[in-house]
Length: 531
Ligand SMILES: Cc1cc2nc3c(=O)[nH]c(=O)nc-3n(C[C@H](O)[C@H](O)[C@H](O)COP(=O)(O)OP(=O)(O)OC[C@H]3O[C@@H](n4cnc5c(N)ncnc54)[C@H](O)[C@@H]3O)c2cc1C
Image (cartoon, rainbow, N blue to C red; front, side):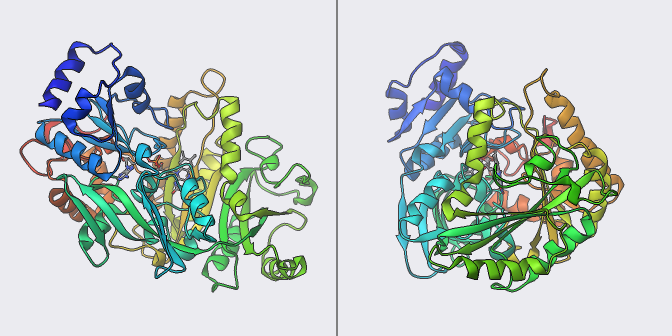
């Protein structure tokens, strides 16, 4: 059997480089390729976080969904092999890795499918491959004058990767996360079956997979809701000294009806200093704009806040009509006078804004350095305490990158998905994203120190009884996973037993241990949980 052969080969030739000779691919009956070269396995052993490494046995480059199913079925025939779908590997903590197993490089089949339809689902829909990058989906949809409704800030992520988490950005207050903007999925389950599912057909699988951390199936196709694409975005940033005023305005904007608010609403905290990475220079929207600190009151604190807003418009709209809508909406807000920045950009440039930061970070080496990021959902009831103890306390000097904080509405999230939100039932909750870009040690603080600071933040939240959940969670023991899922844990375990009973899928999440006998056995049952 190919798998047995592959295992023996790798143990005996661990350090050797070997290109797929086609014979192994034939054994798996792939139309794509199986690559066990040192370069391929080393690359699949890394991710954006740069904190962990786990080398797979081999990397599958599928030609399409059938190859994904063949890979899962091959793993099922082995007593111990696991399969991790890898999107663009932009996880932080090794979630897309498979130690000694198969990594399925979903990007390889990212262009395998694209189809646009005009009926239903808003202004239409696109059926795309699970391994498609959102930036490519956007580009293709724009050719039809259409665009997805809900995004992430950065579009170099795959459809399957973000749908396995949630996928949030400044449109989520209106449209919900990306998981709320997909109506049908094609999924290869942990039993190697290819199933089409939606809220009507095979609905348990559909909702399990959305936000399911890759635990129940590999998304090979997704049907995504579209909207008519606007031409332009008026991009605005306004500054606040007071957190209460910042959250009051942000909450008011996200709860106003469409047409009476902006189309994109985010926010971030920054340091009240001229620090080029954490302070005033991070706020203006172009080199021709300057942050004038004399506009701040003398008693402004060490941390300031910025609301980031976007208004869609058409290039044919007279500038005066855009000005008048923006003037009316901004007129209600209590930001610091004179600390307001505006810029008109094309819709595509707005959505691809982080790509420019990526290019810069790649040029300076920051992109390849470790990224001990921390993402949380914090309840409205806890966000003021979070500001007091974390932004103004632990992080008063910043994190060496953006500290996002913006509200979302619970009603836009479907409770049936596997996504976990703060327990307090209030309608508003916040995303907090601490996106550290640090120079490699010893030029910057060591990754260990930053990870320790993340632990300190979580301890601070616990001590102050702040109601939060990790977004893009990562835990070290079953007890912590149980606590994370809270009253959704039983449902999560049941779904695992039903759709991936041998726990073949997504081992890098470290929730379940691969089983050859007992469905849904927990990683910690035999003392090997976590890290
Ligand atoms: C620069 C940057 C900016 C980001 N910005 C945002 C943001 O604005 N909003 C936001 O919500 N998130 C953001 N993220 C986080 C991002 O959404 C997650 O890290 C996501 O998992 C990365 O997608 P990926 O395609 O690289 O997935 P990977 O990291 O490759 O995989 C993530 C998990 O999903 C599983 N998986 C991958 N593909 C599939 C599939 N087809 N089917 C089933 N499971 C699959 C993997 O096994 C793994 O468990 C950002 C990350 C980075 C690095």
